[in-house]
Length: 365
Image (cartoon, rainbow, N blue to C red):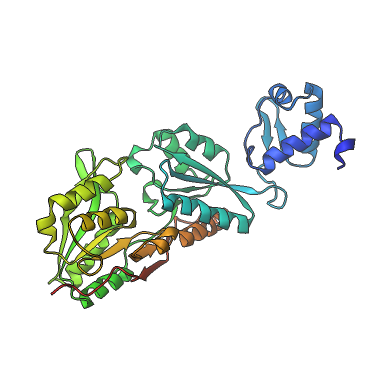
């Protein structure tokens, strides 16, 4: 419509329609009271009512006397994009940014709109707001599931909207999930280290204390130890020497580098180290401080996925559960769940890859 010939009611209608298109008013959500909305747009109450009535006739809005005006649940995707809510940790990290990038790409290709909330805890009110204003939810575990408040748990467990946990199991809420469950692929880097003669290997990890119990924040790392114990019993895999207690929201790098300096004598007896990719620079820094070259004196295997890892020097040997694959599979699973709401929860195995790159070398004799 020619903007110069639009009436105030037309402009108000277009303003509301745009807010719906860009996801500020999601399917099923209630609009602010009409008098309040009229003030917000800058038109009279009667003009606003004309605009709303036009959208009701178009099947975009519906009036429920006594409850308010709602965005229709059944608007076709061709008219209004569906909204995927993505819950991410509040702290910035390359893998967090990569995840948003991959979900953005997947949503754009599927004609969905992505809304991201970075939350510090399950109590963050923005999570409930996101739930209210999206058509489906992709969830990363920002805290232990046991800390979820009852009201959020009830929302996530209800079948009202598709929910997919990414990078971890959703067993605790009975919903779908896409993540890497340790399997035979973990043998690949272990086999290669064994071929290179490594018989003494240690793990660098971060432990946090919950309810008085120390637990790793990287449970997938246990898979490497399980492979060595089952397949190569002559390998010493030390998972305790460099597993350090560091509060969850504290950067572990300082403690890791300090531990390398304090335990130089013990570390000297090992020829390879396993660590999360997020700790790679702390490990490299700690090894350099105590005079170890990588990979000549110490081979390094990392677990994780970052786009920027390709530009690290030396490029780390990498076992990755691919974040891009998880983003695309999560959206596929959400769309499948929309068509199959009564099917039991599904857990999809994420794709993995192993790249030896530049931090593996034969063990020192």
